[in-house]
Length: 164
Image (cartoon, rainbow, N blue to C red; front, top):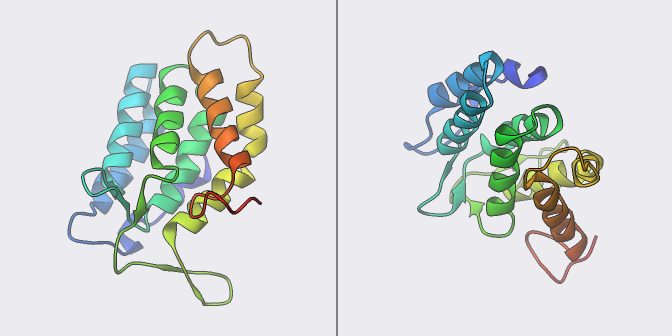
């Protein structure tokens, strides 16, 4: 893992349930993982730290977490890739920003977490296409990447009728 390890997770705002130390530890574990199982478990711990599965919400820390997930998809085939793709598929259109937390765009205007996450995924479409076109991996990752690309093609996370 490269630049994602430099995130100051404790500087990210979030509700009482946000655990920056767990996010940082998961990224460290991911970088040090010596097995696919260990890397996949680290992905799961990261995801648990940056959102609330029960409420279906994402904290602002989901934004740097998506960068990590995209690195996993690009660099770690097998279980870690499947886990990361599964997270993005679960989040797409099903999760909302944690109420009361927004980010700022480059001009200082508020922007929803899901908007930034969607943009990150769209910007990584080439990585997803590479995985979708890779016949060497017999895992479900190829189909999962195709499914995520189909969601991108179908429109926006926020408004399914809004095609980009």
